[in-house]
Amino acid sequence: MVTLREPILHPVPIEELRPTQITVGMREVKAKRKAWRLKAEAAGDKAGEFLGNHMVPTIRGPRGQYYVIDHHHLSLALYEEGVKNVLVTTVADLSRLDRESFWFVMDCHDWMHPFDEEGKRRGYEDIPKSIKDLIDDPYRSLAGELRHVGGYAKDTTPFSEFLWADFLRRRIKRKDLEKNFKAALEKAHDLAKHKDADYLPGWCGPVAE
Image 1: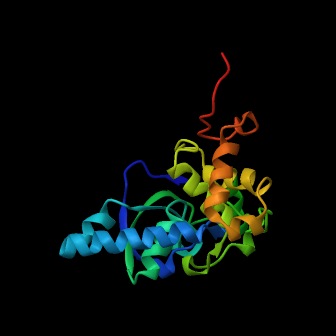
Image 2: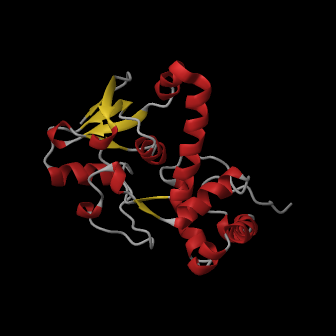
C-alpha cells in the first residue's frame, strides 16, 4: 500500500466516484443541496472556490477507480444539483491490489461501511457502484440532525454518525420516525444524554460527581 503524505488533487466526474457505504441520510442530502444552491447563488462565478475547499478524500482502487471514504452526502447533493466534477485527494493508492484484497484492506482500515438501511452488514458486492445509487437510511438523517442540535459532539471516529444511527434504530420505531421527525429528534436528544449512550463517539451527557 502506498500512503500519500501530500494531497494530490484530481478533478473527477462525480458519476465515476465509487461509494464505500450503502446508505446516506437523504434528509441531510436535501439540506446540503439547499446549502449549495444558496452558496452558488451568492458566490456566482466564485462558486468553484467552495468546491476547492471541500475536497473529497478517496482511495485509489482496482482499475484506477476512486473510492470515496468521506463526504458521501455532499457528493450526492452536488450530483443532484447538476455539478459534474469535484476535486478528490488520494489518501492511499491500492490500485495494484486485486478486488478481494482491496476490500479486505479497506475493511481493516475502517474505510468502508457495508451496512444497509436496516443496520445489517452486507457483502462488499452490495455496495453501490455509483454515488447516485446510495439509498436512504432515515436513522442516519436522525443521527446527523441530532449532532447539529448538540446531542453529541463531532468526532473523528470513522462512521461515527452510523454508530449513533444504530443506537437510535434500536430505541425509536421507524414508523414513529417517519411519522414525526421532530418528535423523534426530541426523543433522540433525551436518549443521547443517557448513560446507555456513553460508549458512543462524541457523547456529552452529564457526568456524576
